[in-house]
Image 1 (cartoon, rainbow, N blue to C red):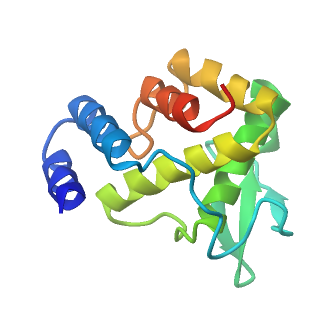
Image 2: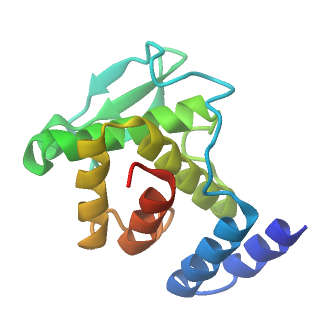
Length: 163
């Protein structure tokens, strides 16, 4: 009940205040705590990874030949470094493990999915990968409408990860 009210409120407010409130709501409700790998896969499951230089980001989950796969941009990964790329690829594994549909449509659900995937990755990526992502987010990187500001993502990693 509280979660639904908060998400309804958050959908009507500007992005920065939304994520500040969202952070408080999710922390209070325990959404940033450990997530079970559950439904679709685990970090160790064979999930195909394919290179796609057309991506404008590190990585994304998409359907390939009727199966979920992780597409990643090797050019972006080379430019930003293997540790940060490793975190992003683990984040995408989180979407698959948590059963999130690729590019979920509803904004509130998408925001929640992104927080969960960040948390899942923070618990399973190497300490160096999590630290690289944390530093990147604190510097303002990784900010999107769905993911929220980098500082919010850094807070998620701190709450869920290996700090």
